[in-house]
Amino acid sequence: MEEFPIVSSDDVVRVRQRCRTAAIAAGMSLVEQTKVVTAASELARNTLVYGGGGTAQISQVTNASGRNGVRIMFSDSGPGIPDLDLALRDGWTSGSGLGLGLSGSRRLVDEFDLWTEVGTGTRVTATKWAR
Amino acid sequence: MEEFPIVSSDDVVRVRQRCRTAAIAAGMSLVEQTKVVTAASELARNTLVYGGGGTAQISQVTNASGRNGVRIMFSDSGPGIPDLDLALRDGWTSGSGLGLGLSGSRRLVDEFDLWTEVGTGTRVTATKWAR
Amino acid sequence: MERVPILKLGEVLLVSIQIDLQDQTVLALQEDLADRIVAHGARGVVIDITAVEIVDSFIGRMLSTIASMSRLLDAETVVVGMRPAVAITLVELGLSLGGVRTALDLEKGLQLLAGRLAKP
Amino acid sequence: MERVPILKLGEVLLVSIQIDLQDQTVLALQEDLADRIVAHGARGVVIDITAVEIVDSFIGRMLSTIASMSRLLDAETVVVGMRPAVAITLVELGLSLGGVRTALDLEKGLQLLAGRLAKP
Ligand SMILES: Nc1ncnc2c1ncn2[C@@H]1O[C@H](COP(=O)(O)OP(=O)(O)O)[C@@H](O)[C@H]1O
Ligand SMILES: Nc1ncnc2c1ncn2[C@@H]1O[C@H](COP(=O)(O)OP(=O)(O)O)[C@@H](O)[C@H]1O
Image (cartoon, rainbow over all chains, first blue to last red; front, side):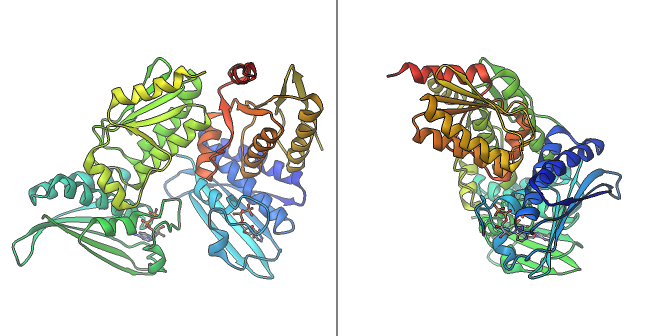
């Protein structure tokens, strides 16, 4: 497991690179790698832009049936998300994005979990398995 | 009545084939067959993907007025559905689907019954009558 | 897992679906097609579903994804041979396949693409 | 912050993205391009993304913005070299890049623009 801070847009680039390395190590196909790295990029940017910065964790995981995968986790102590249903909707943004970061990255991975509390922060965990 | 496990996406294909056989035996038109087989495909995939696997039952049924039909039942011991209204809405998905499986298959059949309990599982029963 | 073969006819790739599609096969087909479009510089894709008995939301989404993805790679997709019963069922299911071009049969589909490829 | 270089080939500006794009670099590129289109009276822009490993919604929006912006300045944009895996991922992400023209590679992209520039 690797952990590193997200405080600038350099860090978003670094998250992509580390996520790519982990995806290759998990034996993912090129398409699977591209999907999980793209999801990581979206979520890392949200941590930076909306969470006011935070932390990324990237780990290699193995499930009960021996499949390998990559788990990415992004946490921040930002404002949290008041209306989660809305935030997860395609095209909805409170800022100036396209509103595809959360909804789109959920589609790109196999498991997606979002915890948030207004005033406390947000934590998104996403897992993708190699086929 | 036939019963078989749904533990892989092969089984979803088999459900379609068995459902087709039953629909033909019930004297359904080609359109009716196509509708019930499509519904079976959607529900079987949900059992696999969201229910974590389960069982399919396919039976031929006859009603009081002598009409023949097919009844399909899918049960799993998965997580259940916390908000059924939401799950039955067109376009709503907790995963990466199109959110048309439940709402769409309900439209494709004549009778549709969904029982679910969080932590216990889900059982969907659908019946289509030959005209 | 079975794989759906992809044939090359000049600048067009032809996919004729002859098996009962499993979800993994669907995903593999999308990836194979993207690779082949780029490898051959294909300008058109014809997906022949004459033999396909049902199109559920997963397969329907595949058709939309292939159409959008090939457009990004500068190829146009035409779906041919949809059975009437499949079309009726798709509508009732709630899938309109908005961005997907269709033609009656393989011949009409190839004609449609030829018209486009003639343009620079 | 790194900047993406913009080359001039006659009436066409060529942008070849060779680095892992940071958001600020993306914003700077949009501004630089607008300036250069006007300064050179360029009629076409080719953005070569052959080396780009992922296009997320921020980079995808840049491609759309550049296409729209250059159209307003009377230049046409073509994006070339999109990798197959990137195309599939973009579609799943939900981005269709509606107004963006694409071509297989630099050569095809330049041909496409040449066809347009030949017209009065
Ligand atoms: N880490 C976060 N902290 C607070 N709000 C967030 C966070 N991530 C996402 N959001 C909220 O969810 C909305 C939707 O996010 P997203 O789908 O990524 O779209 P976009 O990034 O284009 O705004 C954001 O506009 C923001 O309001
Ligand atoms: N057997 C099941 N067990 C648990 N949840 C289910 C089950 N079937 C459906 N669901 C829930 O209902 C939602 C909607 O299902 P559906 O309409 O089939 O759309 P989709 O399959 O595209 O997600 C699913 O996303 C899932 O959250």
